[in-house]
Image (cartoon, rainbow, N blue to C red):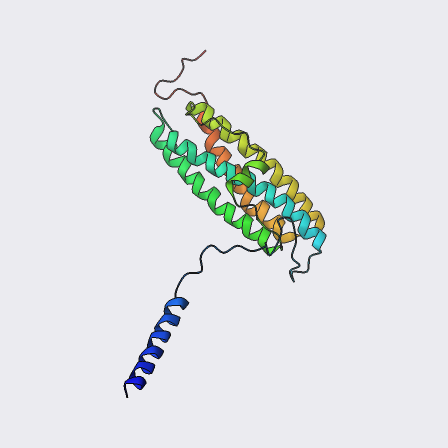
Length: 208
């Protein structure tokens, strides 16, 4: 009888040990990449692999520069100063949020085409065409000028990639670039550029 109890107890203990092992996180795992960066996985979207590859390359450049522009907005949001602090603090953050949404749209389009979107900060830093700002705080006009220059770089890339996608029959990429990316960047340029118009704020200039 005692042996039977011992055996039964051992079985319960074994079960508990197995359950505990099954619940333990399998940490520290590493393995080979399942898809190399730059490799295109064929997707059933009726587009040739060469077309997908060309679109992915163009989109990744735009993605890297959009991520840099997004982060530039956040830097200036934190470091805004002066009598326009409140307005620009809010505007920079609004533009940051809009660029963050665009980043996600571009990245998802890249994945949809069978490619891999650039993701990590170190990789973005290697790929971006946006001029790197200093770590310190710059004057407000310089902040805005830097943002406008970054926008123009991105807009030029968007126009070129949109034309290429249209020529290749990749209407989905063309639509994303024109309807979302181009229009957003053009609108944000308008809101920024008007802050650099040198007009009096209280008293009008005397007629000449």
